[in-house]
Every structure is written in C-alpha cells, then in structure tokens.
Image (tube, rainbow, N blue to C red; front, side, top):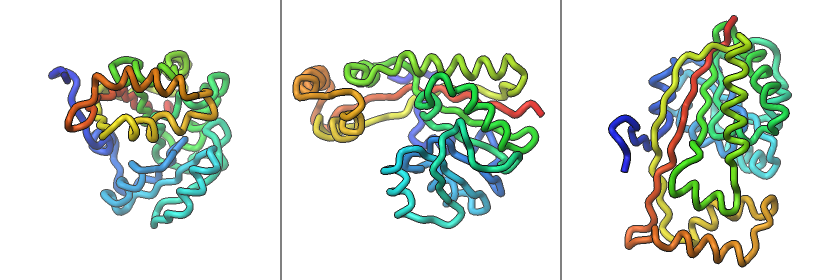
Length: 233
C-alpha cells in the first residue's frame, strides 16, 4: 500500500514538469531507451526539443524507425557525449544512470555538466532497491550494487562542487502484468543473453510470481527516487 508520504504517480512527466520549466527547453536524455517520456514531453510542451542518446544499437534502430518532430537520436554513451559545450538547457537520466559502467559514472556526470548551459538542470530518476517487484527481478538480475553506485556517484559530484542539489522526491509507480508470460516478455527476455536465464530460472521466477497473480493480473508498485541537480556554474 502506498503511504501518504510517498505518492502514487502514473505519469513521470508530471513529476518532471513540476520541477523544471520545459517550454522552449533544449533537452538531452542519456540512455533514452524507447524514449517514451521524451515523446510525451514534446507533445505536451510544443516548443521543447529532445535529443536522445543510446548505446544499444537495436533500440536505437527502433527509435529511428519512429521519427518525430523536435526529437532526434544519436548513438552515444553518457560518458562521451558528441555535442559541444553548453548545448542544452537540461538533461534527463530515467532509470539509466545505474546502467552506466560504475567506473564511468563520474565521467558521465561530468560530461552532462559540460554540455549544459550555465545553471542547467539534470533530472535523475532511479528505481529504489526495495519492494515485491524488486524481489522478483533480483532473482535473475540483481542491481543492488549498481543502483547504490549510482547514488554514490551523485553524492560525489555534489560534494565536489560541480553540481548543486536542487530537489529530491520519492514516489511509487504502479506496474501491472496480465500474466507471467507478460512478465517474462517484458522483464526477463531483454536480459536473457546477459544473465544466462535458462528454463530452471524461469520456473523458479514463475513460482515466486504466482502468489501475486489474481483475476485482474499481478499488481506491483515500483518505488522511485528522483534527484534534481543544477550545474554549479
């Protein structure tokens, strides 16, 4: 159950737009994935534009097949951004900082600072390592270490004076799966190659998933932690 202190949020764009001005903003999203929020952002804020960078060639190819006005994509990692200094007003990392190799997290945050204009903002949204959904996922993809490393990297760049802590927010996002087959397709299939998932692992996760399944599917919440930083200079 969601506590009164931790709101339930179905659209993270509502959180973002409450924290930073988006109209007319030039934004970069690092590790953009399918860029779902970016696509909604340019629809809702007609004068904003977003550049998404992504290292996964398959995902990048999919993105390029769905062009949109004021949205472009480039192949790049956050640790080496192919744009000039002070090119953007703001940056987003949506569940992506913990995917940057740990040794490169500080470099990635420095690169983002470089491409932002003076006092530019960085919106970092990371899943919290907690809750029933996390307990299922960690059976085949335990992200405890990398998620902690992401928060430590943010702490370091703030302590260094490169970034200023501007705001912080926690919320929960509802997640529903109609069946275990949907859970497997959405949560396990993308990690098969990297995590050696076999039939035995699928059966183990299926057994742990089963108590959550009801007539309306399986309902979870994903706890999220947002930290808004501003470029110090």
